[in-house]
Amino acid sequence: MASAPKRIQSIVRSAAILEVMAQAGGCARLGEIAARAGMEKTTAHNILQTLDHLGYVQRRPGDMRYHLGGRILNLSRMVGDDHALRARMRPTLEAIARQSGATVHLGVPSGDEAAYLDRVDPQAPDMAAAAVQRRETIEGSAVGLVFLAFVPGMGQRVLSTRAHALDGGVRDQIEAVRLRGYALDLESYRPGQNAVAVPWREHGEVRAAIALTGPCADLPRPRLVRLAWMMMQHVARATVQPC
Image 1 (tube, rainbow, N blue to C red):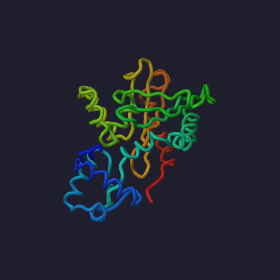
Image 2 (image 1 turned 60 degrees about the vertical axis):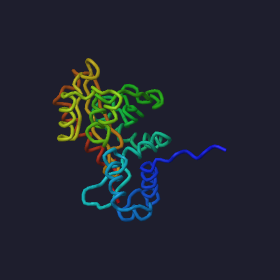
Image 3 (image 1 turned 90 degrees about the vertical axis):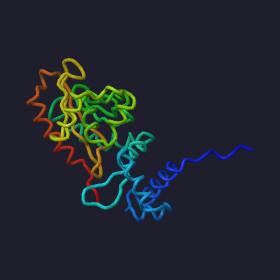
Image 4 (image 1 turned 180 degrees about the vertical axis):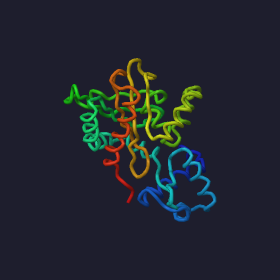
């Protein structure tokens, strides 16, 4: 008879905490988590701090509870709700494309990459979403900068596979995105193409990014900045606020 596998206590406890939070509807206070997981509050707090740093749980301003974070919700996204997200955000993409006349993309974080779920091209409005899905590295693109700025743990994930990916210049761009709320790509990812991207939040956490791209002659920096504010207005109307 095969022997029972050795269990690593910290992993067992971390899994218990995540299950407790899921059973509680996605959020719970420290005392409740510790009691239901059967551990001391100090132990639960230390594990939660680590999970927070990695993006698996999150504290929200003014809220004493711990919430399941964007990284674990992203794992759920990868196994099945891409279609629902695409359908939900399609009207917003179409509205932005109509107002700007440029191509609009919907991207989501996937590991240390960005996965693109949809695209609305004013020149080809009937293009099937399945035909435009692709993945690309995070660093450099406007969508990637949004995820690096606002998704907890994204920078660590990139550095774990590409140690020199985030040099000083990229770090400066990330900080600029945090300050202004949108990301610009001025021919840095693809020659001749400019882009602007804004985050889309659900319950306060960035779950996706919407990017607008086109030839640099059509989308100079001043116009990109104006379009960013227009995009954020559309995205705000599509954002579900916490209960």
